[in-house]
Amino acid sequence: MSNSRLKKRSLSQEDLFNFSELFKLMKPRVMSLVIFTCAVGLLTSPNLVSTKDAIVGILLVSLGAGAAGALNMWYESDLDALMTRTCLRPIPTGKVNKNQALIFGVTLSIISVVALDYFSNRISAVILLLTILFYVFVYTIWLKRRTPQNIVIGGAAGAFPPVIGWTIATGSLSIEPLTFFLIIFFWTPSHFWALSLYKSDDYKKANIPMLPLTNGVESTKINIFIYSLLMLPVIIFPYLIDFVGLTFLIPSLILTLYYNFLCYELYNFKKNRFNPKKAKGIFGYSILYLFLVFVLFLIDKIL
Image (cartoon, rainbow, N blue to C red):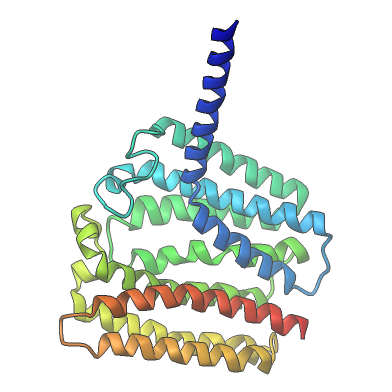
């Protein structure tokens, strides 16, 4: 009797462990960003949505993002094993095998898209499906191992969640959610290229053609600075189309100008060299910057 109880207990603990490892496949940090940006897209729309519908919609979008993350880890497990930043992920450590990750990712993808179509609307489900397919097939399978522009084009996948949040509420597309897309799309390159500067050895081990390895440090610094400058017209755009007021525009411009300054400091360092502290500072600030910009969308909506 006691042996059977111990067996049941060990099985339940093993199941719980497997669930936690499967959850890690979904890239929880990325999911939290998806939840936040999707919520901003939904809450800044002109339509009122019930709390239940809003929560269900946002969770299904985050589930879709998690599915894409799992499929990304399934395909890139060989690369993850070579990099210090990713070698402790579930597949390289043997806690989850590739077949489990593939089945898990595909199943979640189907559930999230079908459920979003049922509980929200068709256009939101279609955009979510396209986002998953784009992230897996265009970015992960096609671009990442082939071109240093992988993160530029691939950044589109991360820019869709707030657009889906908008369509969950409105059931249609318009010019306003394009502002969310453009902000994330043009923010992504400088964010990840700053990371690739001080993690270039990792990318070199995995033979991933990130910009510092293919074009050199100087070119990377220039591109980081250029993309930070491109954030200025992108930040002004929602004001020009009368989507936001000065409550958004002024503080977001200040945040962007400081981002420009940080990127210029990185660029202005010695030729063909970079300051690791400044690269890490840009990477850290860029996360805070994106968060605050989206918070400002909410504040502007409330005021």
